[in-house]
View 1 (cartoon, rainbow, N blue to C red):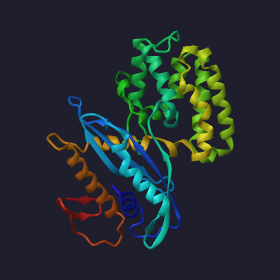
View 2 (cartoon, rainbow, N blue to C red):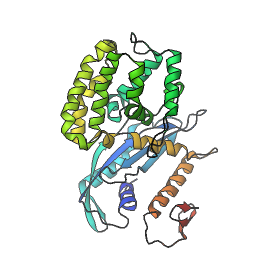
View 3 (cartoon, rainbow, N blue to C red):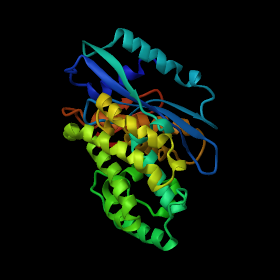
View 4 (cartoon, one colour):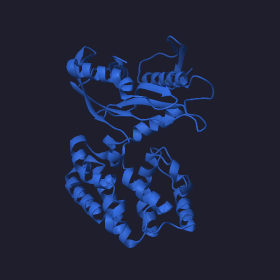
Length: 335
């Protein structure tokens, strides 16, 4: 893996221009996903973004494939750690310029940090409303669940929101981005009709805080967002029950500090990484060698992304790799 990070940064961001900065921050994410419902095969990619540069594609650093998750972190991460240590100590040269590389954050979907992806507490609430897991708080009746599902299916998002909302019967399979879309765009009008007034007033503390912490435009209100979260945590046991005040709920007290240190919530969100995982799963067709299939398709897609940045490239042209010949018909079409 050594030198992979350097190559990805140069090819995807600075293939034609020299970076104006002398420091590049990177975010990394590690998570797994099953490839098939009927088999044990899993992918565990290591993904990377450069949060200070837009657009911000998610880049694939490495992929582990096996019948279970990696047996130990040493074997899974050793080459990555070695390269990060090398880049941290010596930097790298991009287009003749010395650049320092700094690991900004490792973004992972763990319970202790789940609010940073807007999913831990909100997921707990919605699942509680549907399944009754927040007893003694009443759960939605089958009729109410059907009504909410019908409303969700009618919602049409702008084109920049890729995933539509699904019915509540698929709630166990919802992705973090679905909970995020529900929270930001549908929760207020729907929950105002389907939970008690006291619970809704309590939920609004959480909702407003998330909105304020999601953009640097509201930075002057981040302290106020922290106050709202403190009230939300303090009242949680009264609205639901003290048994439901988990570490996810307590973790809300630290979110403002994280946002101040690392930027608004989208900068430390798993959404881009989750969408990349979802797209990688769709690259696998039936048959053997799923890892080779994913790697080949990832390389092809990266070639397309890079090719679209070549404003003066003459088409068609070919590129020969160790495994295949790639024919670029135009900026967006490749065989």
